[in-house]
Length: 333
Image 1 (cartoon, helix red, strand yellow):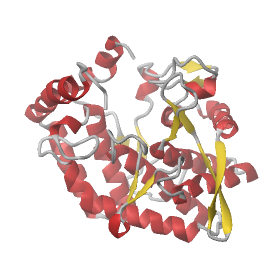
Image 2 (tube, helix red, strand yellow):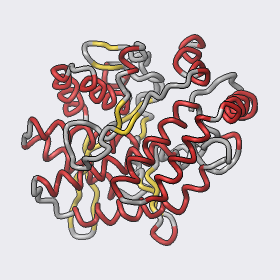
Image 3 (cartoon, rainbow, N blue to C red):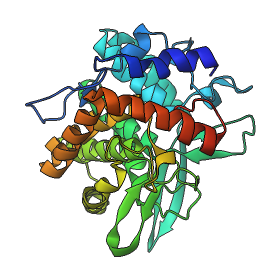
């Protein structure tokens, strides 16, 4: 990701006023082929994604010297499918979904008297192909993508995959593939970067992961899927929603929101994440009927619309977060 790319796709957004992301379904809360959030098509229109053989490459790992599956970021893969629907190119989704299903990994863990099989995507950050992590945000986006795809093209393989990907929410955090961080008092955080102590509790990744598990629970009910772990998944979902409810104030700097905790200026988010926080909180708030999330969505939206706050956020991002914390002029989280 070169300097020009960062200016065009990230820094320039501070000087624009239009929104890129919107809540798709203001009234209808039923699971359908449209994702809860729209706006991903801008990444196609602005050519933010590089496409190889119909598959979008990762922004950070796209140039790894390795086969295609190592150079794909799961979030970009899923969001590309959401974008294809927005631009009326659903016919391209089949190739992407087939690629996803083919390249998922599986593992199993002993839970009491039985083994639990689960599926996950390996995310690589560099040329060391022995080093990967399970992206909690991506696990949720896989569920959001496949539940919608299955509404029009239901197969035994997809149903089996949905169960196994949702099983990953039951894997202990200390497991190499665990991303569900169980804290004290049954507080549950879905970690985007589960093994990175420098970026704990990433807000947008947590909510995307919640939305994915919500979608699976709704789909399982709609299709009467036989899942003997469904009640455990509902419990994990409810515990995580409750945790987010009471922790949300920690993400508010007063003039902008944080990318991740702990609460300090170095963890301020970039403007595209501020916009995502607005729409993600509105989505999870409507789906759970929790006005607390809607309230913070409105708070973050007022911050986003305030020109003074916007440039204070830019100053904080460049001269406090990046130069002091990262030693970079502009880092995009």
